[in-house]
Length: 119
Image 1: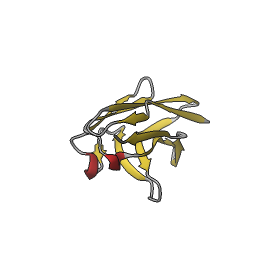
Image 2 (image 1 turned 90 degrees about the vertical axis):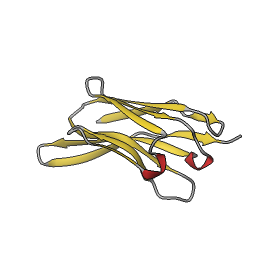
Image 3 (image 1 turned 180 degrees about the vertical axis):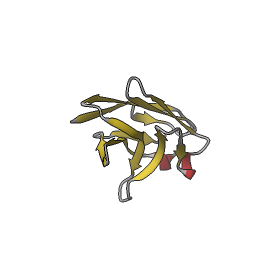
């Protein structure tokens, strides 16, 4: 069992910055990727950014240029540095980990941290 714990969420004014962090603990298996998703009220959960172990990094088009994802493979942590925040960035942000055990692939999710962008 793996636990993902997010931190860093909160209230920020439009144009402000925020840094989210996630730490994985427990029985860590081989990790395919770690990243961040978000879900706004009434909307589907969507990918924000993901960093794959094979080196590929992807960002949602809506956050490109404003978000940087960082991953420390040794510590099993992932962070999301966000700047120039907009009200539409308001959502619950979830840390995500994809792992594999041989041919089996699975996912773990954090409980989420609220980000509110408002003046």
